[in-house]
Length: 317
Image 1 (cartoon, rainbow, N blue to C red):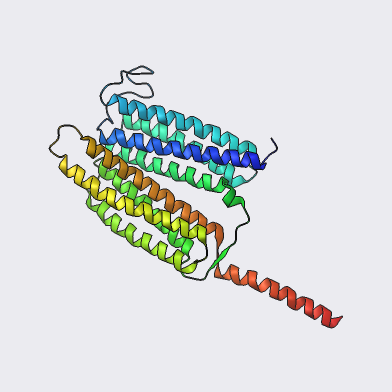
Image 2: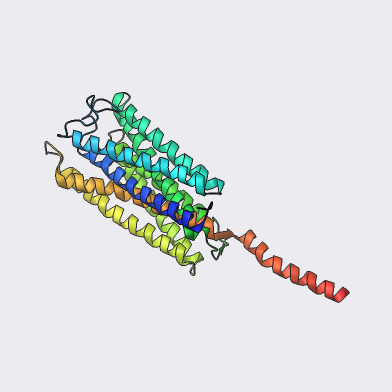
């Protein structure tokens, strides 16, 4: 297949999306490990009780399933990085592919450290944070490989201050920090108060981002669609947060985690990941189609300057 042909580009894009979807399953498996209190059910790594396939009983089922899905995602990421290197001419795509591979390897090593040594609260929180970085890297890479990104898109001018892309970027950063605070709370590293404060800050920034994009780019359907996804996942995450808190307080007296508690808390973890991904994609879309006021003025001035020069030449002739 010719290098960077439309068929190759579309194929690697679809594979990147598939890998991203499998990563969502990996995040869900990790949440099941944590919320079923199965993090210490397997004491060794990379084998489990010295075997390739351990007895699938108790918490071992969740921990081992998490490892298997992580192995599958690692293989998919390796294939994706090699595929991109073979068919993509754009250096950024190649760098992102190798970055994703490096992140998934680092994630596996950090998972091993969590099992073998180190403070579980700190190492588990770092493991969760790196998982989110890996996920949004794959999501951003998928967008960069998409036909939408590579097409000739109409651009919009942003004369506001700060720029909408900057607001969206800061929103993404704060959502990531909020997700890390949530992971630290789940793993016992901190209390709930920092996470609640972070929720208030995220609320303000999500609203600000949506208002800025809608007011400044009323005709940019792709950006407005991104805001819809951002607000939808944010609303869902707020509801899941209240539900998870209620389930947690209701299950305090239970000897083992209840099915309702596990379901709602894992859904809250996934909601946070999807909210972070939606903010990341909206940020990248803003950088793709929005230009600053100075660039817009320059692009508008160039045709006028060329027309004036042509008129002068004709007058002189």
